[in-house]
Length: 195
Image (cartoon, rainbow, N blue to C red; front, side, top):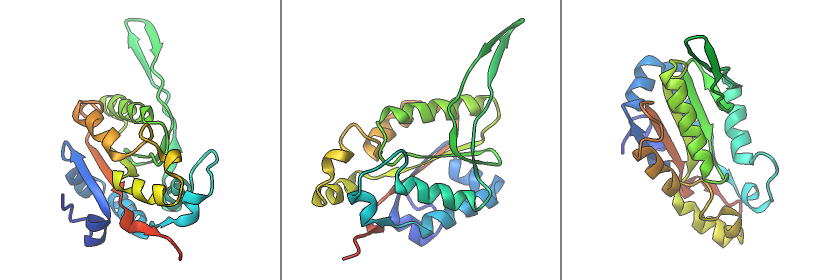
C-alpha cells in the first residue's frame, strides 16, 4: 500500500491501515505524523542488536522510543474507571510506549504475540473513552526471520513472538474495535549487517 508518507518509508516498511488512520494522522495530527515519518526514516537495524542477547527492552525499541521522546512524546499511563450508577469499577490499561496529542504508538519487536491483544484492547478502550484518536504499531515483517536464522538467532525470534503474520488477523478480527490503526512492519532492507 502506497502511503505517500515518503518513497523511502513506502519501500522499506510493510504498511497497513484500518479506519482511515493515515488520513486522520496526516490531517488532524500533522506534527505527530511528521515525527513518526522522521523516526522511521532514520531507523536502521544494526547487526549487534540481533546477535547480542536482549535485556528488558530491545535496542530497536530503545532507538524508536528515544527518537520520539526527543520530539516530545512520552510513555503514558491512563487512570480509567467506569461508573454505573454510583458503583465505580476500575478499568485499567497498560502503559503506552509513546504518546503525544491523542496518538498512541506501540513498538512490538520481539515480545510474545499476546502483547498484540493487550495493545489492541488498549487502543479500543482508550479510543472509546476519547483519549486516543489513532493507534500506531511498529513491528517486524515475517521476512526478517531469514536474517535471524542466518545469524543463528532464529530460535530467539520464534513463531510465537510479535511479527506481522501474528498481528494482522487480530486487527482484521476487530481486536482494536473502532480505533483507527496504522501498522508499520520493519523490512529486511533496513538491516545494516556492518560487514
